[in-house]
Image (cartoon, rainbow, N blue to C red; front, side, top):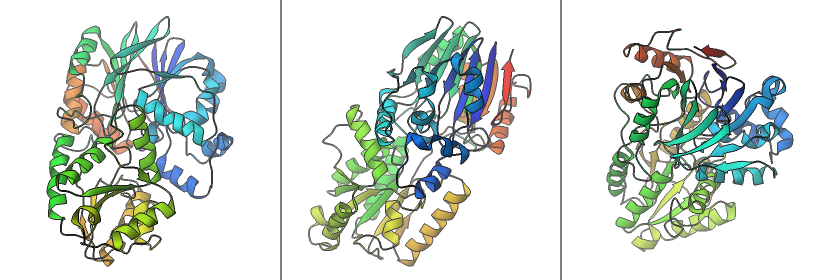
Length: 449
């Protein structure tokens, strides 16, 4: 018997957590936060620790697994993670320890969790590092495998749960990037092998299921960034804001900047967290990336240095600054910069490049709109959407379904409109709603014959 229970990530983007039942064994895949609610919660707290777990659940920041743990917690054999984004892993230090089972993930993903554990004062957690292409037996009847996939963060994987019924694949999040600028392309050969062995079910990211066409490679963004940076070279300072976890993007910006003789500064606490993890796990070389400035006084000193030398020394004084704040989130670097909290005043001599897109939640959209207006009022030169998504589009989803030929398909990650788009595109491939294609929402479960 295979059963799937949805805890989070099906009604909206974020707070991902799914339980996969294989007879009397249970595998939990991902355990994340609702990042929008997390930002609000952090704004009211000077420090978050494991003592806040109940409050985090009550405020819908992390999944509510209370009843599930009481009734079936002893059946959980492993918690397996796809990648290191906070909407997939942030709840681990708060919820995972009570299950007394291994938490399995790639080295980079677990390094982020280790750093988070220190931040929230959690010491004990059984972390099992598993490289992509490797398997780990969790019980007599279940073996888990991490299969290499591309996304907007290093060491991403699709989870394959191998059972006597066939494999259950959990694919949150992914894209098919055949020319990645960091790491390897998807392991198509292994996917073909798993298909030959039999795929009972595919649970798959539907974030871009309503977007026609294909999602472009990160190599395309590198070209776009090089073009835009060269066009803004005459600006006094170029601020580039992107996702803190997008190590490939950050690496590309640094390499492009060096080609045109520009020094690089990086600002932001979340930038520091992800970059340190990438260095510690040897994804990037320590000497490639400059030290990240996180303390207010340190950032102000660096900004004064830039401000006091406009155009005097091209190599030293014209900087590309990689920073946080692309969603317009309060308290991030760009928010503080536009509201006068740092020793730098933006003007028409500066450029701001958004190498990102706004995550489509009401709060993010509102914050981003306010940031845009503040930047426009300063006369700054803005370049927007120098970006490609980390999620597969409609045609990519069809490729994955055709490549794996699962008996059952369950769209996830995105909300009812995205899930419905996933169901619709699967119909073109012969899937039928409530028979082989299944719409699942948070709190619901389904048994797959």
